[in-house]
Image (cartoon, rainbow, N blue to C red):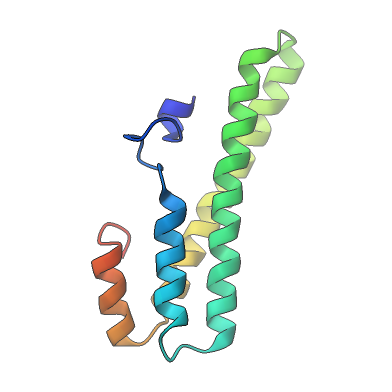
Length: 115
């Protein structure tokens, strides 16, 4: 589960992703962006990071229970959390695009795949 999600090992896609989110918030926060935008961006980033952690925990926990209803509940909860996390990530990207053009250019340099 962790290999598919990308949360295990230094070669996993999500390894150190917190740093990327923090960099975006820092870049936007250091610009002339409205404080409300920066706060919303921080909140959205936190939602994404907590979501990844929660999905990882729930899906990994399936390995340690033998009760089918418990496994099904954990997987159902992980899927629901994945949907919420993806929505939070979209919100994060949408908010990042509200920054001024110069800041957007810096963001594209910091996170080319996302912008």
